[in-house]
Amino acid sequence: MQAQDAELQGLLLPRDRWTPFEAAVLIPADPRYATLLMVTTAMIFLLIFLPLSLLLIFAGVPDMIVLAISSIGVSLAGLSLWLGHRWANALGYGVGELDLLSQTGVWWQKRTAMPYSRIQHVTLSQGPLERRYGLACVKCFSAGSGNAEIEIRGLPIDDAEALRGHLLARAGVTEL
Image 1: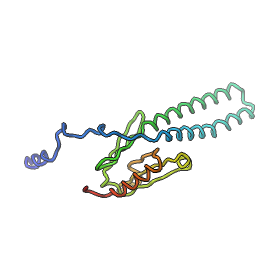
Image 2: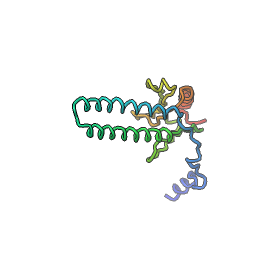
Image 3: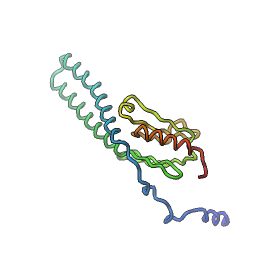
Image 4: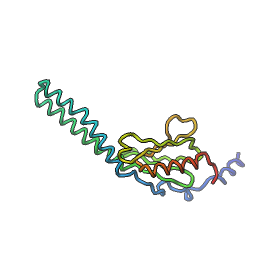
């Protein structure tokens, strides 16, 4: 048992030699992504609350109730716009020698490092509004996982294509 412990100690790095995760300078999402989220949120709220308000007005609902419901809708829309903007500005990613880094979250932040050797496949996707803004999302999958391990949103399409090519070239490679 002591021989195994001694051998293991030789393989472990002392804490003062650890590379801090914060040392990586992450690239933020493109500013157009925050705009895209705000436009999407505004469209959703307009599609829900405008017809609802008109229905209430034409149904003869008292003005105070229509005003209260409209005020709630405007408040929720404002909060959603603010949170979406904050969330988009909190996104970041980094391309390291051995791994891909991703950061998400406003209040509950999540930082993920995925070694290139674990990447099985990579997808690049764009919705209609992302195409309009020239943005894309890169998703990395590992073996045995049905969901993306890392999603990097808000990338300019040229950067997304270059990142996808880099990741595919490095996927599954265990040595440099």
